[in-house]
Image (cartoon, rainbow, N blue to C red; front, side):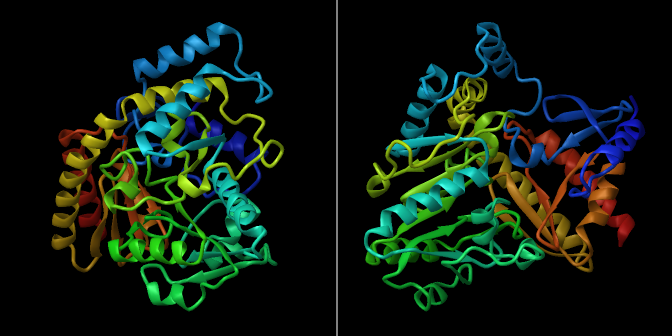
Length: 394
C-alpha cells in the first residue's frame, strides 16, 4: 500500500486524537527509515526518543527471536520470567537503585511513583504532590494532573485533588507551597515536551534538601531524558544527587512498550503484594530487549555525550546565522532543541520534504532526539537540511 492508502484507511478507522504527518513508516536501518512510497528519511525523532539503537539492530533481533522461539510471549506476573529479573538487576546496578517495578509506559511508571509517594506519606497525613510549570508526565489521570501545562487539562476538568504547582527552576516558588502535607515532588531533570529545558543544578540540589527536610519523596521523571540520552546512563547523574524514585520508559524497552519505577533508599519496600500491578509489566519480549539496551548503556551514553556536544555546536551555528528565525539552542547530550520565532511545524514539514524527520516540543521548539548510535556524518547531514529549510523560510 502507498502512503495515501494508509492515511485514507486510518482516517476511516482512527479516533481523531493525533495530528499526524501523511507518511507511513515501512522499514528502517541504522538511523534511516523508509516510508510506504519508498522515500528515505534520516530519523532525528527515533520514535520520540524510543529507538536508542536505531533500526535493524542485530542484537535486538536475536533477543526478540529467542523469546518468540520459546513460545512464551506472556505468562503474567503470577510467575517470574528470567528476562525481567535480569533486566531489573542490570537496571539497579546501572542506577545504584534498590528495587524496580516494571510496567508498559512512562505514564504508568509515573502513576506508580505517585502511588508510592502517597502511600509513604499517608500515615503521616502527607497527601500533596508538588509539580512544575511546563512539565509533562503522561496522559493518564494522575499523570495529566501533575503535568503543569494547561493545554493538556483543557476539556478534562476537574483534575485530581492534592496537586500544587511551582515554577520550574525557581526554588523560592517551591518553598512557598511545600508543607508538612507534601508527600512527593515530581520533576523532570530535563523537561522534554515543555520545550527542552534543563534544570539548574542548584535547583535540583535544593529540591533534594527540601524533600529531605519535609520527609517527602523526590521523584525524577526520566522517561525521555533517561537511558543514556543526556550523556550519562541516567540524567540525575549529571547533577550529583539521586532521587528517591526514578521513572523510565521510551528507550528502556528497545522499541517495545516498557516502563519502570525505580526505588532508591527510603523508597525501598513501600509497595506490598496487592498495592500495584501491571498485567503486561516486565513482559518477556520487552524485557529481553531491555537487557540488550541496558547491556550497551555505557557505550550509548558515551556516544550521546560526544555526539551531543557535536550536535549542540552545529545547532548553535545555525541559530547564529538565522537570528530572525531562531532564539537559542539548548539541551543536553542527544536531547536538544532550537527555540524558534516561527511555528516549529513549518520547519518540521520543510525538513520532512528534504528527507529529515524532526519534531517539536512545547509551542516554539524544534526538537532533535536521534538514535543514540548517531554519527558525525548523520549530524552533518541533518544540520545541512535544517539550514536549507530555514533559509527557505527566512
